[in-house]
Length: 302
Image: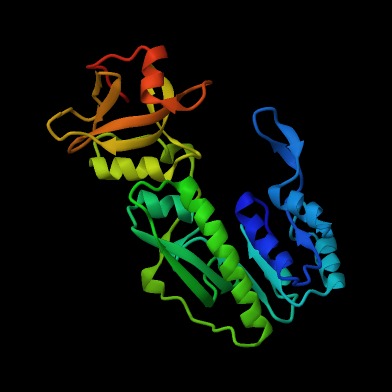
């Protein structure tokens, strides 16, 4: 069971190891992209490629969906980046149901663990497989794999790395369950921290915060949904920054344009903006942006 690109490597690795995937459950086709063309999910596209039967329920509580699953009689349900399963669904297979989560649980429970780990300045993250329980992301841990977060890594590159690391964890977890050797390690409730869904209000940059926090915020939201500043009442998405020369003091949000380079003050030191995007335009370097957009020293980002 899965929907986005993150889940595709896990499906591929199970098929590659000739494990009998009897069906794939994914979201219904929906409008995607700027043109809002109705398209299948990445997981559906991969399932069609592998010629695996598909289920696309509108509601996971639909009795017809539960009946269809019982007729399939799965031994195990593997969940990767899917919706919250009701107990009557995840209790169907005799070997249980497990989920792949892109954090070291119980750290960063929730919908956006990759984003929040970077936003909060973590230097390490990983993936966790765990048996499903009624409360989201609380079930017994089967296995975890750790990885450092690079100092310049953003949410997009970390997402791609964890998708492939997670696929390996999914394969090993299936084999542990198949042989009856899967551990069940309870999560330490004192270590819980949340990773809620990202909304627009999370994306506005607060330039009065320390430069390291601002930079982590930008990395944690790049490339999607992207942190943004306001200039002239319009949003500018900012994708990549670097710490600037400490000899260039600037008040928070104050802009300095110097030799085709763009600097902005933060709480304790300036940042250099390396990549950004004007509304309705493509993503570009700061030098490209400054050639076509009027931005002057002394102005401010809101």
